[in-house]
Image (cartoon, helix red, strand yellow):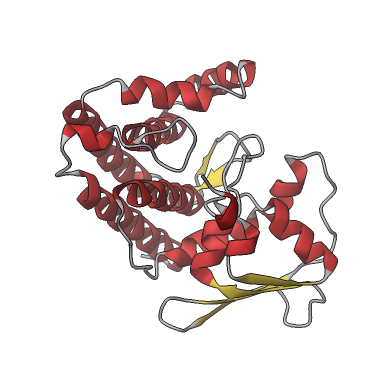
Length: 268
């Protein structure tokens, strides 16, 4: 296997493990626990898993039938503010047993298909087309982020893992997207991002001599770019006005600007 194939295989393995970790939280839940509210407005635990199942299915469609996926994108553009919620609502209406079975089947099939695509393949998406590794990275990011919402609803504290490096990577790579989705011009110069990994290692991106810098903990940064926490509570710091502005609007996921989360002291 060449270097690119090795990297892709490692990312797919982490995607598998991230899915299994969340599966372990919900597999034994009673039916009433699936109806618990999560931090996302109007979304229960069932909505969170239904959204992951739906997005896995959309990813699978993009990887196997580009024409059909383009049709799905056009349908989404007709209702950009509601199509994600509609997918979650439909899945949440299923029984927990049916939903769990659907999510597992979609995860397994997506892993199989991504693992069989030729190196160099480009997969269409709601944003720019992605490589196989990038698609898998995006699925890790979403699985982790929605898993955080599920864990909070269940009152569970999850230990951060080295898989967060993928969330960090996509958070850094989507810097300009966060500006573009708001109709803003992104800064022209690169930033330096230095984050402490769960094991104390330094994860660094960007030139060392960059004037605009972001530092702090990797987990807090991941929560911030997936909009699972407010900047005041993320434990990350900006040096420079452009870096500060980015942290205020950071968004690692596709779609319109998210609502974000209120500061801890203002939550109800």
